[in-house]
Structure formats: structure tokens, C-alpha cells
Image 1: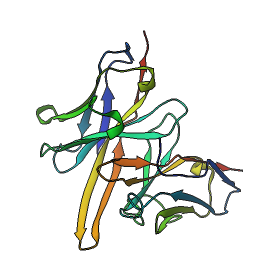
Image 2: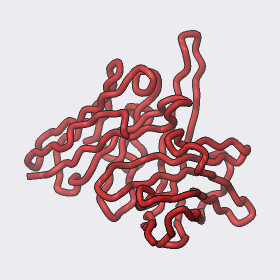
Image 3: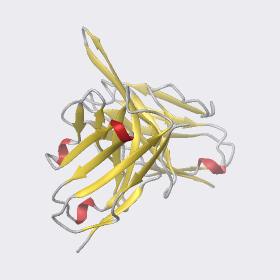
Length: 110
Length: 128
């Protein structure tokens, strides 16, 4: 089972800001960097954030990542309909766990 | 432009071996960590493991010794082999390219691992 905990859902109206939390432990988020993925069922997941704060080329600056201790967050500002889908955080969990994903958060644009 | 494409049987019988291949175009199997991830119906993403051109491999401990990830550099492909499958292994399987770096400090080490290019995924059903 996932060792990173996310809220199951989040929703907001277009143009607003939504934040997704990701809670882990000292062996994963507390020690290593965090990445975030956007997944629309039936399509390939897309990397949104890596090294906790960095956006890959092509990802708009509406997306921002942060981390404090053993928790991380992804914020989406100026929410758009295309932002709907599932969001997963992930981090290296050490030799005992490998790469661990969060439980996933379904974002709905109202 | 890096592209990955999974291929393999869509149906595997219980107790048999699941075998998938990922063909990479626009890149070669050096430097990166070529990985597999799956998503079971109604569940989240689960990391399976990776193979690096150096020969280094790693896999999800929860899969114990059932999983093997290997590379075929001559064909620019990498593969997943999962033995003794059960219905719990029914999932969409994705191949992906990963980067990994580890920084060592006196206070400990920090690992950055992320998957930046993914295949479209292939559904594998385990059923008799």
C-alpha cells in the first residue's frame, strides 16, 4: 500500500487556486526530493514537478511545489478545465521501499 | 522526441509469467534508469522497478523475487518479467524513463528520482 498520504479529492472553480498535500515520513519525503504527476485515466501520466520545486519544460508556472519536513504540497493557481484528473506525489523511500507514490488526489474543476 | 511503447500479451494465466517489452525511440538506453510502473483497477500508481545500462537493477520489495527488469541495448528495448502471477497482478503496465541522483552529505543522503517520459500503458489481465 502507498506510504504517502494524499486527500482523495479536491475541487475548485476555474481561475481559483487548489493545493494538494502529501504526507510521508523521514525515510521518504523527509530525506529525499518529491515529484508530482498528473494522470488522466487512459493516458500516460505526466511529470509536473521534480526535485521538489522544479518544473519540466512545458509545464506552466501555475504549478508550484513545496516541502516542509515530512510533508509536501502542490499548488495549482489559475485553475483550468484541463487540470482535471488524478495527481500523485512520489519520493524515493530508501532501499526498503524503493520509489513510493502517494494515494492520489482527484481534482475536479467545478 | 523520446517515445516509449509497451508490447506483450494482454492475457496471462494464473501462476504463469508476465512478460512485457518497452521499445524506446528518440533516445538510447544509456544514462537513464528504465522503469516500470503499474496501476491496478481502481487503485493508484505502483512502482515496479528499473534497469540501468551499468547493470544496476532495483525493484519494489513488495514484489519480492518475482520481478526482473532487463535491457536489450542492441534493440533499444527493456523488459519486465513477473513470475507466478495472480489476479492481483492485473493492471495497466507503464514503461518510463527515469533519472536518479544521490547527494551524500555528512548528515545523510538525498535521492532524487523521477519519471519524465512514459509509454501509453498496456492492460494485462490475469485470468484462466
